Amino acid sequence: MNMELQDVLKLEWCEERIEKSKYFTEEFFKKHPTKYRDLIEKYEVISFQINTLFKSKNKEIKDFYMMSLDLRNEKIERIYNSLLDYQDWLEKSSEEIINEIKQEIKELELKEKWDENFENIQEEIEKIGNKIIDEYGETVTWEELNSPISKELKLLCEIRDIYFLNKNLKILKFIPINANDNTYDEEYGYNYLLLGKKTGKIYRLDGVESNHRPTLEKIAENFDEFMERLYLVDSIDFEDNNDC
Image (cartoon, rainbow, N blue to C red; front, side, top):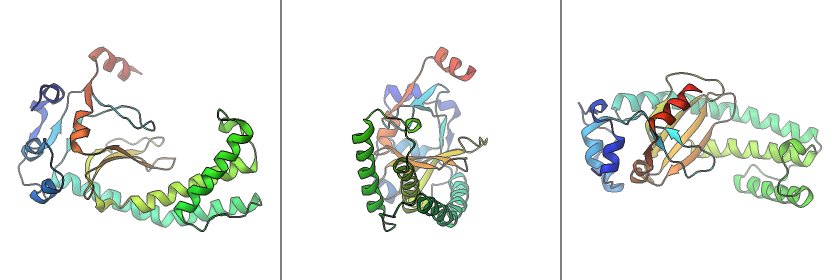
């Protein structure tokens, strides 16, 4: 174990395995070799110092605090059940939401330029975006735009995001490794860290059951990169952030 990881880990809070993992198996490690295999096999809860942050390279996600990774079988299965219920709701409700958006487009007397194909929607979004830039410049904000074309762009972006989640949010393709679901905030909802079974990539799912649409963003190419992007902030900085 390298010195940097030793600094980040809170070993006295880590919980050793009491049963073999159903998810981090020999087959998993053959597919996704990691220098942290011994750590995963020894501990079912990997705890970090309270002032540990994950350094995000995704501009959509700010650096965030990491308290632990909970790899217990029962914890993973509980998250599966919760997210499968959410996925079922999303699939059922998205059709209704998309129909409402379609109606808004019709009310704006805009012809639909897409056939419910993700690639076509994205292509149309890029065309409209370029047209707005040509007309208003690159620094224009949503507040400065008040036209049918900007409304259409927003609506198509909403449809694209819904299709993206329905296409990609197949919970059983992932292993949940962290859940921020103990307390509920209607603005931010719940968030989860998901490890792709096939790819080994790690994603952050934000905004589950919030008052805005959830997002699924890749934050690391593999478990090694995830662990190596953890860092400590000064205790003073941590206390200041918690006082806000």
